[in-house]
Length: 283
Image 1 (cartoon, rainbow, N blue to C red):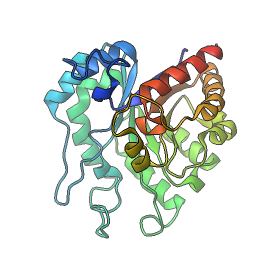
Image 2: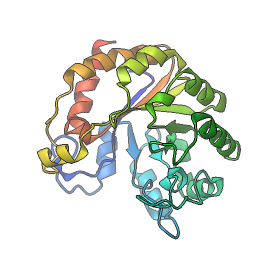
Image 3: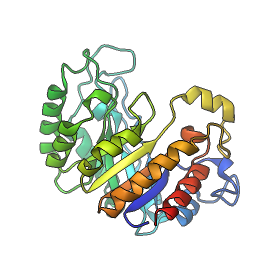
Image 4: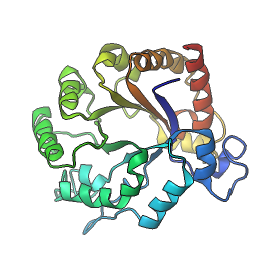
């Protein structure tokens, strides 16, 4: 369907043999993946923050990703948590001196710039910001405003937050004013994405992303044994509600990226197939 890009969160899973890949160890995972799907989420550069410094993408790997994909393929990339983590490390109380630091983004983007023609979204994923990290939503919006004002113009930025009470009219108005796309997460204690789309579908703007995740990461990993080739937590009813809303928003002109994680049902490729069939019915 026009305006909809459906893909997975990451792609290098040997257990997708037969679903996506010709074997458990294809010569080029991404090249084979790109023959079947038109987008993918890159999350490997997110976990970048160290106690004393931070990591940046490998230029050679960036070039390999570019070479492996056609010109109409799209990447939705999770930007480094060096930018979005409030504390310097998990469980610590020392503030992260690189939080919302534009210089870190500029260094990051310089590394991935060869992918610019294929960029769908550059996503900034924030953790739950409690009172120890952010006094209020207003303080957060003020910090974001300063941050985005310092970034290069014209790039496809997007933001995901994990404070469900902050998702509302003012949030979508702020993002639209910044020309930043919203990222809606299904899972991790966020409000059901169906109700969010029903209420705010007309407020999403020109581009948005829906990330389908589950709530019990450890549980589903145990159930699958890290073999991501079958459904273990069916969400068929949920998908039947989500699909018409996605189709409606796309028909009204918004571009949507639907990023599906293995942890959502147990196998991203199987979930994608189910969703695509539901979208076909919507015309």
